Image (tube, rainbow, N blue to C red; front, top):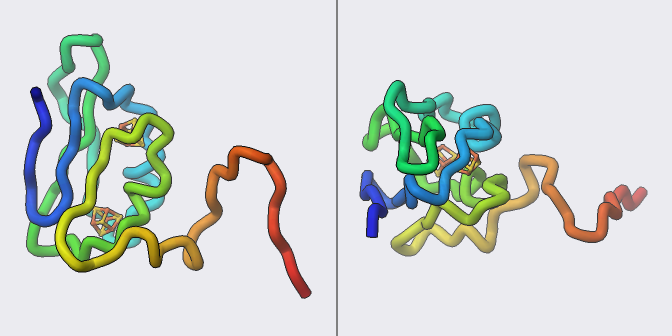
Length: 96
Ligand code: SF4
Ligand code: SF4
């Protein structure tokens, strides 16, 4: 297993395809893609500063490859109100 642990989030770097979605949506600007490649030949996500991560879970929600795990009591399930989501149905909720 190549899961890399930082702070309360961990990354499965072998599942990461380097799409950069999590990097783009991290509100702390706290993620980047590595200079190195995983065994799939992709750059993989890295946490820049573990102390700056509030475990908001947005990166977890954005990752299409389930390469990010949030641990601890900060519930990723509560996240979702602050970023557009990739909903499987393609339906966008816009009540109001
Ligand atoms: S959990 Fe939130 S703050 Fe931490 S890296 Fe992911 S998006 Fe950024
Ligand atoms: S969203 Fe997922 S696959 Fe894309 S760079 Fe981030 S961890 Fe890797």
